[in-house]
Image (cartoon, rainbow, N blue to C red; front, side, top):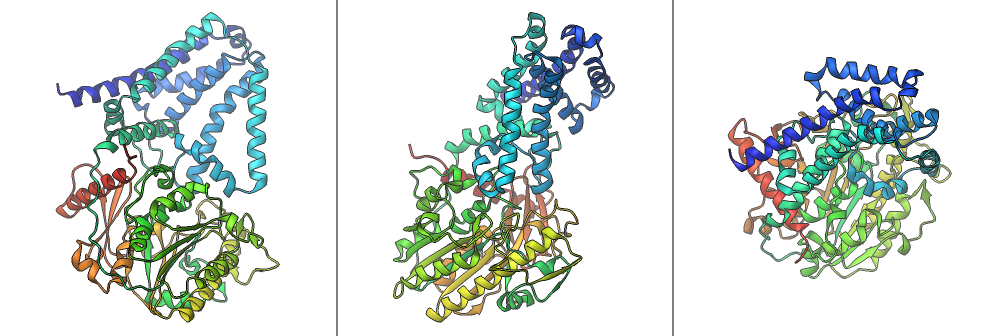
Length: 591
């Protein structure tokens, strides 16, 4: 038996042991755990029902609902064994696993991906994005539940500890074994706990599988081969503007709605008529910084459902990204983002990418707010004012506009509703009007930039689609794309010396190549092996691949791993593996 096969077998046996111990523990609990309560009918109905369901469906233990139920039950029993008063004990024992499941189900409903352990590191960023009352309610619920648990705490009896010991030992052993990289690799590659954007093995199991997969990736980071650096070519010394717009999608793409008047500004209406294109971004509904990473560094941000590349960039790294390349060519590089420098660790990430000047909330006038975010009008006005101070120099002025962030709040005195939507749904109408004001502000910025520098290169794109799918009367998905790609399309508008540059459907990670090629009059891609001119472009995600033609409707979908169905998918898999290794090499700390 080979070593790899032995590791796979060990992983499967460990999983079988954990599931088996679930059944044993449920059965033993009825006999040993608080028999006085069971006799009074407080515990027996629930446990007998769960046990009967488990035994009756033993061959189907990997069904998501059943596996989630068994794990939630076991977690509840572990909590119950440490509680005193039975009524409060039952409430607390049900609340903790229920809260974990509710959080994962809620995230899946809004963003299409289950929760995972890494989400803990994003709680601060989530609190920054959520409304104040939502944060206060969540803190109050957690504090109340924690206090209730501590107030009712007691030391378990010996038989209760014996009842809970097998599953606790098994889970501890599984956790410790996962720290061994080859074992983690076996779990992430061979178990039926698939790490996809859908909790096919249940929320708890999917979260654990994400941990195993992350451990496996971290182990192989040292072995990852870096991407070959592109050869430098002479660049035209002219201004470059890149605007990334929060939740920016063409509202008219949602065809079930009628809107009056035109929701976007004239330049975007011209884009819609076919003069522009679409960016194919790596995320849906959140984690804008992964889109930022791609359009600045030219490498796909292929990470898990809670992965944020900005947070993984080592503080001492100097990445070979677009800002650094332009800086080496004599450009002044400026980044403006109206949030804290610690938001997604943007300050550290921008420095690593090569931005010479980094402007965050402390360097900006933050008085004109739309909810919790600086308005698009104020953000772009201050960015344009700063760019005017760079007259006579070649520069990159990169601006992230986070107005129109969910839940689409606005200062309605300054930016009232201008677009009527039919049928009227409040969340959708709020988003349409927020996007309308972003479009107006972006057009003003473009006009001023071209008036000051007619030879400027200007790119505008959306960071991701808004998380509208979970809302009541949700709009239908964007039309015009096949193979599940529609949710990753955002508008991409490119103006080269005032003329729109059509690019079709362009993966966001190819934007640095495009900028360098336009600044060098095509020399960059003549000297380097660019992927940009190819008739087919790769859009990798963590568990699937898309091969794009020049239009969004011409899409080939491939599996990310496993045997390829045809030579095209086989070549795409090899290229995606090379790019994934390049990302891991970029995130490797210097030793």
